[in-house]
Image (cartoon, rainbow, N blue to C red):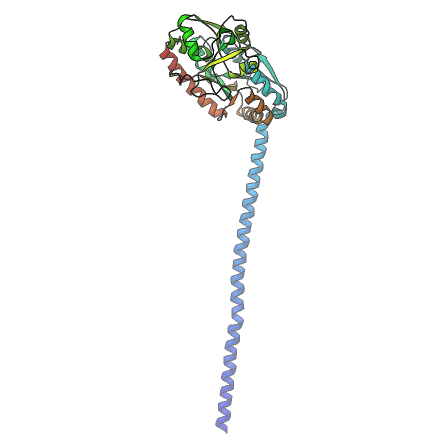
Length: 371
C-alpha cells in the first residue's frame, strides 16, 4: 500500500513537471513570435518612411522643374508685344503666302500677333544682311531659305554667314520646277528640249545666286542652250512677267502656280528634285530625264545669334503648334507646302551647316563659284 502511494505520488509529481514544461514552452512561443513581428513591422515602417521621403523629393524636384519650365516659357513676361518677322522676298510670292498663312495662328500659339515686313532684293541677301543689326530679344525674327546661306555667299559678296544666326524651327521643303506658259505651246520637257536647240531661252528666276538660278543654269548647261536669264525680286513679279510674255520660262515652286490651274495659264515641265511631287504627279524629275542633280528649297525661321535659348524654346514650341494646327496645316498642304520632318533648332542648325558645305562643292564643280 505504501509502495502504491509512493508510486502514485511519483506519477503525480512527474505529471506536474511535465505540465510545467509544456506550459513553459507554450508561454515562450508567443513571446518569440511577437519579437519577429515587431522587427518586420519596424522594417516595413522604415521602408514606408524611405518611400515617402523619395516621393517627397521627387515631387519637390518636379515642382522645381515645372517652375523652371514655366520660367523658360515666359522669361520676363515674354512676349509683351507683337513679334516682327522679316520676309526677304516681295509680297505675293510663295514664301510671302506661306508666312501670312502661319501668321493666322500667331496670337493663339505665340500669345502675340506677327507683324510681317517684306524686304525683297538680291535673293534675300539685303534683308538678311540688315537683320544682323536686330537685337536678340525675341521680338525680331526672319524667315529664311537655304539658298541665302548655301549659294549666295559663294556667288556674291555678303557680310553674313550661317553661324551669325540661331535657328528657331524648320518649316517646309519646296520643290523647284521649270515652268512655261500656255502661250509658248510647249507641253512637255521633251518639247522644251527641242525648243532650246533652236531658240534663245528667256527665263526668269527669283534672286541672283539663288537655288532657282543655279538649277536653271545647271540644266541649261547640260542642254548646251543659249540662255538669257533675268532676275526678279519675288515670285509675284516673275509670274507677272511670264503672263506678260516678257520671259517664257521660269523656275517656281508649286505654290506659285497652283492658284492659276483653273485659268490654264502655266505648264510645269520638270521637277528639279529627285522625286515627283504629289501636286503634279505627271511631271518628270531631272533624275528621270538623265540629269544628276537635285535642287530644292527648304526654309526655316531664325533669330539673332544672341537670342536666349529660353526664348528660342518658346518660339519653337509656338511655331511647332502653328504648323501642326489642323486647319493651318491643311491650308499649307493645299498650297503645295511639304512639312519638314526634323525641324528642331538643333536639327536645323546641323542641316544648315551641312548644306552650306555640300552646295559649295557643287557650285565649285559647276564653275559657278565667285568666292
